[in-house]
Length: 114
Image (cartoon, rainbow, N blue to C red; front, side, top):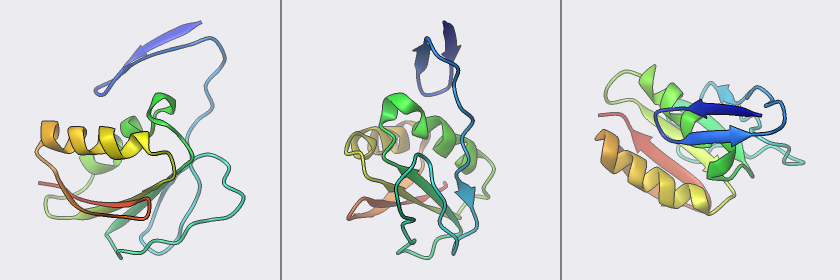
């Protein structure tokens, strides 16, 4: 069993966590969790992150926070997430951090770092 406190949540697990492999350049989509097929970006942002079917309990908000932390002010991150819980948590996270949720369409979210 493990416990990890992050800037967005407290995570408790009983199995070994697998590392995430999901940050890419703007035009190349990769996976967060197995999707069966890759989802292409639609906004043309500076960075692209595909959370796949990860719900918020599986850590995509931590990965998103890490990506945005390494971006310059004014840059945009496109996020694809098929789990609807990401929409709620991403909106709240943007309000708390001062970043802006610019657009949301068909499971794609565009966030601008402030």
